[in-house]
Length: 100
Image (cartoon, rainbow, N blue to C red; front, side):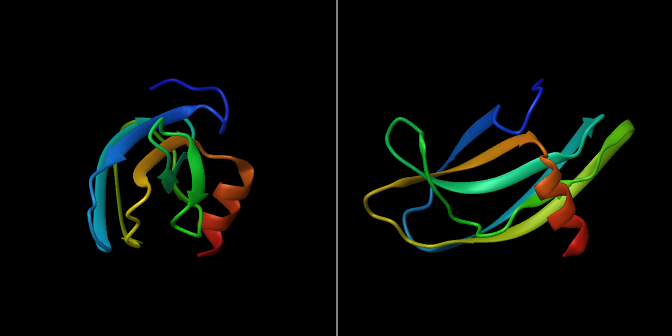
């Protein structure tokens, strides 16, 4: 993935039919922090809401493979789907992740 700002990113559909606790583990290399969020999405994968209610970021790791792990509660939603959104972390996401 190659993006220039936090508005661009990758959407990965999630399949959760009931309330779920999802564990995310990813290995990555990036010259910039990577922002992560779980979104409630419509059938065209447009963002309706940020389910995670927090911003999270994996720190930059340009020289070696980094590992990032987190756990997210995804509430049940019959009418909408969910997706993981990955992007270049914005300054707000980086500050929030460092403070938590």
